[in-house]
Amino acid sequence: MQTIAQTLPKITLKQLAVFVSIYQTGSTSRASEQLHLSQSAVSSALSELESRMQMPLFERVGRRLNQHPNAHAVYVQAQAILGQAVTLEHYHKHQAGQIHIGASTTIGNYVLPPLLAKLYQVLPNANVNMYIANTQEVVSEIEQLNIDIALVEGMPRPIDSKVIEKRAWRTDTLILFAKRDSKWLADLTAYDQGENCYRLTIEQLAQLPLLVREPGSGTRQIIDEQLLQHLPNAEVIMAIQQSEAIKHMVSADIGLGCLSQHVIETELACGKLVPVKVAGIDLARSWWLVWHKARHQSAIWQTFIDIIQAS
Image (cartoon, rainbow, N blue to C red):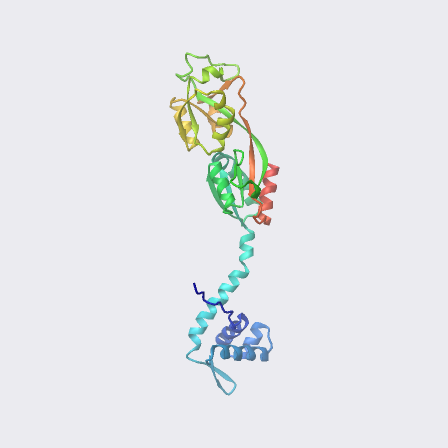
């Protein structure tokens, strides 16, 4: 297949800037003052531009320059080109203040907002783009270089682990919970007033309906690895994408749920939902910072890292 040869333009930005200045001021002397160039440099740049374009842009009448009919159309295009060049020069400044942050659902909804508030305190003009999804979806965006940095709940499982950096960030605990006075627990165990919780054995828990997050979420990963492996016959009645939906369904006594302490702390505090403790089950987990090794670590990137590590 034949390709079209790319040619470098011989017209320079300096020539266009000189032409625009002369067009606006009406003389080479005023253009030289505006551009801080010698008058001979201005005259030379205009002559070079006219030569490159092979047409006159001004008519010389004595020492005056009158606009040629060609000049206006060239002026419009030159203004656009120079404007784009200025935008390109400032592009790095825009990028320096921009960051794409990913977060798995629990972190994005409950933990990230105060961290962003701290970032805006340090960098009021920060331009932040957010992507909130389950852990696996967020890690996939990192792999495709669509996100600068992500905070996820599950152990990252990238397709190519050689390109992904990860760092344990914070410890979180998942909590099994039920509605206060749940019908599912009435015949199994009494409410422990001293500890403000229900207590079950693994065998008892295996008899109860569970509402859990969908596969691919960090919460579900921990449930699979640290809870359901002890409950081979457990009744998982529903896999749900939204933690809020699980809370409402447990509040309606459809079954028991298992979510981060951050998601249900308000409902636990007011007694609407109550913890269910199971002997021998530990649902502690690490949260992770994840980024692509090839991603540029800008100043705002490092500032956000510092805020996260200090929190």
